[in-house]
Length: 287
Image 1: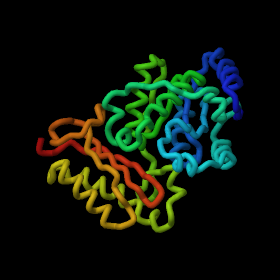
Image 2 (image 1 turned 30 degrees about the vertical axis):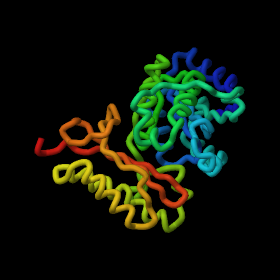
Image 3 (image 1 turned 180 degrees about the vertical axis):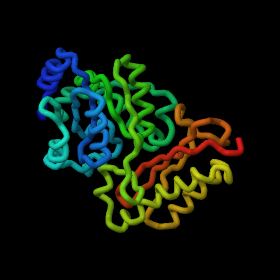
Image 4 (image 1 turned 60 degrees about the vertical axis):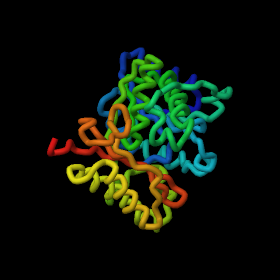
């Protein structure tokens, strides 16, 4: 594998591969890699001739300065995890902030209602920052396909919209959430959980899967109240939001018959760490 820190060196090497008509897969990350990231890399390797993995903590998508400051970073560990997977001509792209943003970014995207609910409501400016960096990375790497985990399901919808806005010829490949042995969705932020918060964090997944399995019994609003009460009474978890929404529009549903594809989304504060998760809801049996 090759490690590049500059845009020009990365583009030169990718050009040498595409000149040979080789297919390029891309896995953009912010580092602090875990098995979830590695599963994306493995799939990209199976489906492409070569893979580019970017490691860049994108400052413009953080609305909370403390979250940016505390985001885990360990490039040495990340490279050690990738080394057994990547081949000679595969790339790890590790640009600096100055390399990616030589001047301040002022672009404003209009992602419509996709960006005003859930994460967009609680993290103003977040998705604009995601759009900026993903557009930059796609134009640098020019991949045939890019791989994203469904844990950030709303982000996936934003990226699909970005592809349309920027008219980028990139196939977006959603990949299933990878979970710990106890159901907790894998996240780079999990390493910051205290032992006590870590022991209770799996209850997030338990609560939303139980709710998703019982949509025949309660309305969306009733199930939301049950989830909030179940998690908040623990004392160590505080629900920021829970929503049942259409998978395509991401708009909340009031009744189960409003959509054939509904997903339960949740964000929970566990001490200083914010955790998100989601699960699909099976179609109501009685409909």
